[in-house]
Image (cartoon, rainbow, N blue to C red):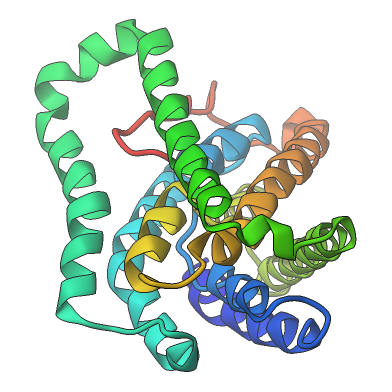
Length: 268
């Protein structure tokens, strides 16, 4: 899964950014590559793995570790592959990303023994806070674009092209992760975890990172491919999860029941 997130995805991103050169504004090309450098999601990866009757514990560990590694690996990859676009690796950038993304994660895990049971009893409240925080992140990004007037530089055809490229990227990574997991002899349950964790990108983490790594640039344009990709991955993976779930029950692990998705105190 980590090879998919931090090796295969960046290679695909390099190809995608090169393919749209001259067709779309330069910041959109930067955004397509930046999308491919981000860590995986957490909650949606676990949820889709559970729906598909996959290896939920493996999905939980992989997605969580991907987010932790992404705090360092994403800025490093941005510095290496996007240095000419203004992205860079610096101690200040790492500190800002750690403060906004890593610290809440660590704090949530630290207090979980005391408030975990209470949160499980108030799922509606946690869902509202979770989805509300993501909504505020997206709203802030779009608002900044409106204030800066960047949306006037995009046409409907530009948006269609971006969405089409996002779908192609998603199709390629799902096909690659599925093929590799089968060729390497993983079980169906492990394949499900690999596909769902290895094909997703975190918007909740990606947008705050972009505001730090690309300060002074048209961040709204850079994160546009990510926002469209986020919606695409939800629809496609929901369909794929239902398809996996329809396989014969005999193919599932012999345990009486799969563990339910574990809610951890971080946004997907």
